[in-house]
Structures are given as structure tokens and as C-alpha cells.
Length: 127
Picture (cartoon, rainbow, N blue to C red):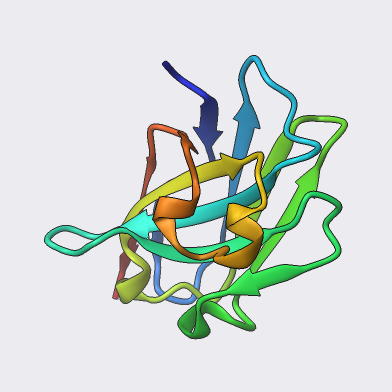
């Protein structure tokens, strides 16, 4: 079952920017913690950023702090990831995810905290 529609991925050169969007399908996300994750070839899926239901708290992987910004539009049922100063090591398939419980609020960057996932979108950064 598809829970999200992701868009905005693509290929950019190092130093470039991309904005990922993720629209929920069939369920409201206003009470959900939302997260962005990524998985590079041969590596485990890792948490990149997360945002609480009211948008009052955000969480980031150390290597993307000051470069990535997560935001949400509850009215539009959408979460965004603005990525700037992209680096080749940011190359991965990016996924959005949602959790309606308190689990993700306790471990917001842990993939296992999220039961609802998008199908992923490719981001490729060339040097």
C-alpha cells in the first residue's frame, strides 16, 4: 500500500540544491511525526531529519545540519526536505515516513520508529 507520493529528486552537481516533497495519500498527517531517511547502495537506511506533529521540534543527522531543512504543511498533508550545498556522499534513495504514535518522538531518526513509508526517490550528487 502506497502511503506517500514523493517528488523533487534528481541529479545535481556538488554544491547544488534540491527540494524534496512528500504528500501523504489517504490519511492525515497532522498528528504524526514525519521523517526523511536515505539509503545508499550497500548501506543501511539512516535517518536524515524529522519533525514533530506541530513542527515545534526538528531533528537532524549531524552531517546534514546547517545544510538540510525539514518543514511541513499539515493543511497540505505534505512534508518537505530542502537540501543545500549537496555533497556526493548525500547520494542515496530518500524516503519519507510517518508515525502516529509517540514512538518516533522518542527516537525520531530511527527507521524502525516509523510504520508508514514512501517508495523512495533518487538523489544523485556528482562531484
